[in-house]
Length: 495
Image 1 (cartoon, rainbow, N blue to C red):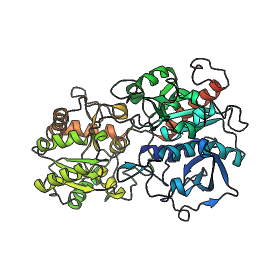
Image 2 (image 1 turned 180 degrees about the vertical axis):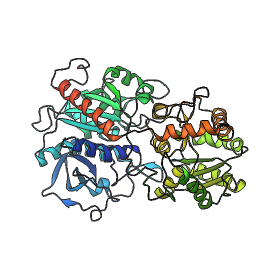
Image 3 (image 1 turned 120 degrees about the vertical axis):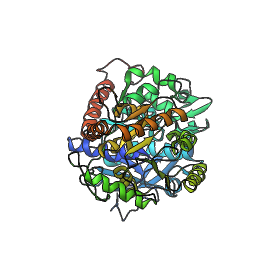
Image 4 (image 1 turned 90 degrees about the vertical axis):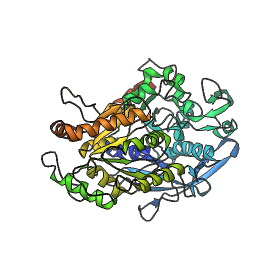
């Protein structure tokens, strides 16, 4: 499983959570799983107990010739799953994973072509012959291209099937056409039905066309990424592979996100005794400098402050929202304008709005436990995890009905009382305000219905055991397809 991120070693987004969790559950099912990631500077060799493997890994890099790296071995915590770290200072000896000061590194094409090629060459060093190579997003999407071209007859990986998981269609790995000379797969692959898009190399497109099977992190996003609104220019490519595309919702690590045992919250509580949640609310209000009031609903938000998360829509709606009798607690960092804008909002409404810029895992847990509602007005959300955490903590999600948010949250039915949260469809400030108003009205006027929603929410479970079983089925299908036993879709993935 080559990837650009893996918790707890290096994380920018949900991709790292998947790569850090899924292998543990696959290993528990009896599978031999190996993870390969770069050894970024933030990965401390001593802290994680990394040990060097003997020898040097030779990585062919096309026109750049052979390049070299050391390999360190570690383990995903609380598991025996090995993680191999590629030590190459020129590419990975820097603070950021992908960018610095919101500017992508200019050599990201070479950095991640190197990762893809090194992961394949590593199999020879380890004497490891994988049945499936599971790659993630554009960073390792070159692997399926390699498997179908210059590694087709390789004794270690030539027979391996490939699964490409798309976590976010917006980021595609687009680079100038000269990257073809570094890939070294031949310019015949630089076509409309291969790596070429808009006269550039598009690594994600190449991966979509070449992977044995495809999946993404919710069934809803699997449908959405085939549309103009969510496909980011590759929707037609995805539609061509629609019969090979599957949606598998990410799981939650309930050993960390569980209000009954969470050591980071002021008081624990469960579905049968919610009294501790009231104490968590009061402590959250106190910590964030808000008036301590039991008689007002608190809305929490923990997010990157970027357009994908609907922060621009929230900015437009927040003046009207704060006219309601409620409080809002926000934790996150992102686009500089958002820091200043919401900072001004806090200065103008210190009794109703509190902002903490940055990320604080302890505070994230306390917001999940102490808030009554959780805001996620995302423009798109392939899976999302905070809405799942919120359900477990009895903090009712207020979400836009997209991707994994739509799949995991059931809208409140006023007539029957069914549901686990509140959903809206249009990405507008008006729709967001109306839905927040609906939640506030329910909080003040329908206490019995609210308590039922909370208990229904807390009963939901999204486990990695379930997700791992579904991935295992995909792996078996991919292996059969690679061996020519499953002919549908063979024009692409069966090669």
